[in-house]
Image 1 (cartoon, rainbow, N blue to C red):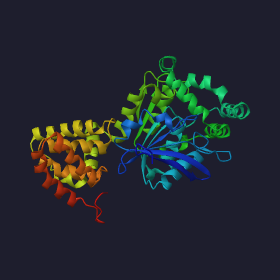
Image 2: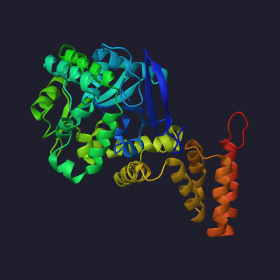
Image 3: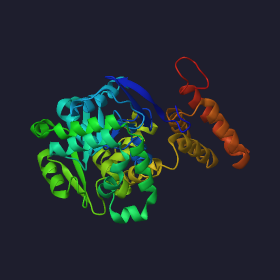
Length: 395
């Protein structure tokens, strides 16, 4: 467990020690982010704050990359896909959405084709089901085994980022260089050979998961024509980002993230409904019957989109903090009618009974004694009602 509440570690899967990290609410559905060749899970740092408002975001390093070990070669794409499958098994994840870029997109397609029940939806970014010729990958692997990874960097930067992005964002250039440095030469070479031998075209028709293809307009590795052909084969949506090369999630992070979110989590209204149920609970939401008149329905839709799909989902504060702020405001404004079910929501979001009591007592200083005196019976009843089954007072 990290200081910011994320879970991270290393799990043994099929001879590889796979480094992973999970960010986001514990009860949320799982979204896997799978890296490109030569990068590590830090590739997704710009996406995680927004996506983790709706998902448990699972990132991991491919074998031979970053903090993951490199079993003996040769590798096939089935080995790399099997690593993700084994990681999901080890983490007790029955089903996940998978977003992969480049090599990660190949892994997403392999998993969706061979284990469809495990995949809710896929996003395939800057990737292809076949990426020959084989000899070029064999030559790259041989060069890495002979000279290491450093000589690859100038050519990779030209492929990964447009000249404009490289000039404007030296931090990205330094970041991808650090990720490449953390790759094991033999593991990288074996992944190159796996890509060279891969051909997923025969199994694309077996993919039933809702799919989105994302490409970069300036990508020399998987150009827009390749992305269009893949989208047609997958019956998928297609987005080509106009200022991006091969690592589109770095070049245009906001547009990339919003596309992933819209595909995997749905419209703002649907996202808001998901967060509302996660915070307030299925029973409370079910009790709030659909309004009968059109004006009330429009108001309800607005609140769902704005309050839950936007404000409660902003990455600047986690849900525990938002719950604490909500309780303080409800006490201060004397909104006791909403206080009770927001206490239950706060418990659901991880606040302990003791922390809730401290929030209420804090209000006595800054909001006044009368409002807190009026809130005390509501707080007492709600805490009793949400007391854990084992009788614990603080958890």
